[in-house]
Image (cartoon, rainbow, N blue to C red):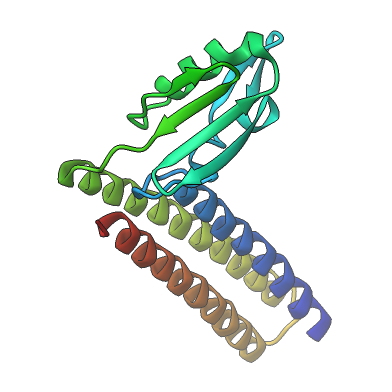
Length: 188
């Protein structure tokens, strides 16, 4: 039965890692006043009849702390890139210059910082809910083992405690990531 516990923990850990990675990707898309290529990566543009990620039609670079550039590989897509960046809801105003699109990052207002912090909180809560869902699935599996008499009641309690400790560790990591992101957002 110890092998079953290890398999269960590996599965739960893998799924909780997925929730944490999703949170990190979502946080990367939140603007903190510093230029980061991750800010533009979620943007998709209409290219060749398909919605295509921006990083597949050009190179995103950070030439200065408050500037992003997109070197568009196909000149015919420059206007589509400009429109997609302008319409993505990040409050950016891209400026085309040949095949290069410059994206200056304006200073964040205090109101916008508050909105970004709230969005970060919503993302973190979504990750916590995902982790708790994984915990619930693990607890149900453990109860199923006990009902089938594959493990004892004592083993069920021990396994449940281990799953809870695993869950608590991931919730703590989510809270730490949120605190760090909020610090980044609040910095001037």
